Amino acid sequence: MIESSEMAILDRNAVALGVRETNLMESAGNAVARTVRKQAPDADSVAVVAGRGNNGGDALVAARFLADLDPQVTLLGHSDRIRSDVTREKWEALQAAEIETEVVRDSTTFRLDNPDVLIDGVLGTGVAGAPREPEQTAIKAINESGCPVVAVDVPSGMNVDTGATPGVAVDADRVVTFHDLKPGLKNHGGVTVADIGIPAAAERFVGPGDLRRLHRPVAAHKGDFGRVLVVGGGPYTGAPALAAQSALRAGADLATVLAPDPVADQIQSYSEDLIVDSLPGETVAPDHLTTIQETATDQDVLVLGPGLGSDPDTRSTVAAVLETYTGRVVLDADALEAVRTAEIEASCICTPHRGEFQDLGGTAKTDREGWAAEASALAAELGQTILLKGPDDVIADGKRTRINRTGNPGMTVGGTGDVLAGVTGAMFATLDPLHAAALGAYLTGTAGDLAAESRNGGLLASDLLDTLPAALGGERP
Image (cartoon, rainbow, N blue to C red):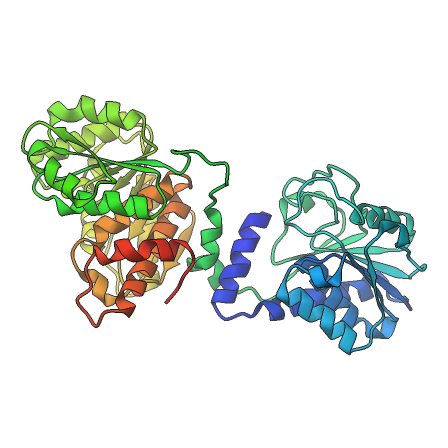
C-alpha cells in the first residue's frame, strides 16, 4: 500500500532512471482501456470525462486505445490550460487521430449522451478539498448516468489517502489504480492494481523524487525548518565548522556549535552565520553534560562527533548525553562508539564508514547487496538507523533499505563526512530517520558531483558548501 505523496516520489525517481513520463501515461491509459473492456464487454460506446491534470491524461490515452468504441471525450476547462506537457501531448494525439472531443468551460453546457460505459478521469490523487465547477457538475452527471463507471486511479472527489469525500465524489464500479493499492481504496469493492512499468529501483535508489519530501511554505517562520546543534571540536576545528555550515546550506534555519573554549573562536571565524558557544577546558568532558543537555533542549537535532577526538572522558560524556537526551541525534566519527555501550533514549542516525561499521559489529562484505544486508541487520540489532558510507551509500533502519549512488571518488578527501553529518542533521529536523539519512546522502553526493564538474581533481570538502543549495534545488550534474 502506498500513499499519494510516496507515489509522486516514485514517479519522479522512475523518470530519473530513464522511464519516460509519456510511457508511464501510455501504460496507465492502456490498463484503463483493458479494464473497460472487461467491465463492459458488450459496450459499443464509451464516454471519457477528463480533467487537465495527469489523471485526465491517463483517461485521454484510454480513449485512444478504445477508438473502436466511438469514444466521446470531454475535457473540463480550457485546453490551453492543460497543466502538464505530457497531458497536452495526449490531447494533441487525440486531435491528430480525429477522435471526437469537446471542451467544456461552463458547467451548464456539460452533457452525457447515454454511453454504454464511462471513464472518470476528472480529478486525480493530488487534488484536495471539495470539487469545484465544472468538475462538480460533471461528477454529479457521471453518478446519474446509470452506466458502468471506471475511475482512473481514484474516484474523482475522494481523498485517495483517507477515503474521505469532502464534497461530491464519483461512485465508481471499478477503480484502476497504479503500481500499488492506495489507503483510501482498501475498502472499495472493485479495485484493479495495474503495473505501469515503475521499476523497483525507483523505490530502492534515492533519487530526485525524494526531494519532494522537503517543503518550505510561504508563511513559514524562523526555526520551522530546524535548529541544529553541533557538539564537537577540541582536537579539531574544521570538522564542527563544516558540519554546522552544511546544516545551514541544506536548509536548517539555525546552526549552533558547542565546542571547547580554545577552539570556539576559530570555529566562529569560519562563518558569521554560526552561533558558537564555548565549553571550558581543552576537550568535551563530563563537566559539560548539563550545559549540553540544556542547550539541546531548544534544538531539533543534535549532531555529535565532528572533531571530538578519542579522549576517554569525551567518550563517556557522549554516552551520558545519549542516555539522557530523548530527541534526534546524528552520530558521527568518534561519537559512534557510544551506540554499542550506552542505553540510548534518543532516535539516532549513525553515519559510519566501512571501518567504523565493522567496529560497531557489522561484518565486511565484498558486494553492495552484502553490505546492504549487513547494514539492515545491524540497524535492527541497534534499533537505530544506519547510513553506511561507501562508493554506494546504504541507508537502513532494519525494515527498509535504500541505496544512494550519488558522489564520486574525489569525496574521499577529509571533511566530507562532516558535511554529510551536517546535511543529515538538517534533514532530520523535519523528516523521519530513514528519509533524513537517505536525503542527507543524496544531497551530499550530488553537491560533490556538482563541485567536481568544475575541478580536475583537488576537490575539497568546503567546496560542497557552495554547491549544496543547487543540489537542494534539484540541480544534477
